[in-house]
Length: 119
Image (cartoon, rainbow, N blue to C red):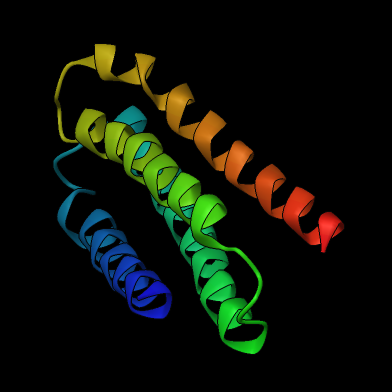
């Protein structure tokens, strides 16, 4: 499940990156394109992190990846999702929830660090 979720995230990141590069560049403002670019960068890097967690749990089955994985996934949805929605012209108040996604991603990485330290 972990690897398939990570692979799905990476596929979506490629699709959204392509849409931003080709579909949005003539329709969006520079601010909207910046939001899209930021979301796509974070999406790719954190999806790669999810992939690494999927590989880790295959190599070390006893390593508990569920909590960091879920925190990262939820953080990705909230952080990147809010930026993508704003880039598509939805209300800017969505930016108020963007930091919640960032905090979830940070918490996911810190949880992983703590679990690795304890093991």
